[in-house]
Length: 178
Image (cartoon, rainbow, N blue to C red; front, side):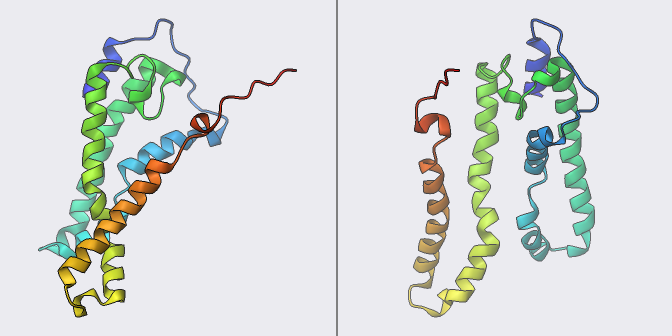
């Protein structure tokens, strides 16, 4: 709602260019990534089903959740494209006219924090399998070992992510002279 309101109140200076059908299908990567994010819960779905008190309601639950995500995304993408046309970025809050607004910065934090805190949920299936493979429950100090293993499984990708640099930060830009 905040990003839609920001888009509607921060119109571009010139009328945007829009195309109904884009001839370069490879340019749809950003949109695909956004929808992948919206529907990227598939790694935890087996655990959700296994932990449900009423597993027969799984189909209804998944239809509801995916429908709700669609209803949240459609107004956002419709308003953003109508407002900025081809100039809309993916994610929408990276669009030049709204990216530096304080309210948009708050929305980015509100969007990112739940993902950080939900990351351990994505690890539940692989860490459970690794714990069974290592037979953690049969070892002394099983709880301490489990905490240590799960901490490593969160710390390793977090550390790797912190070390990754974009090409722009690795070296100064090259200026080719013709």
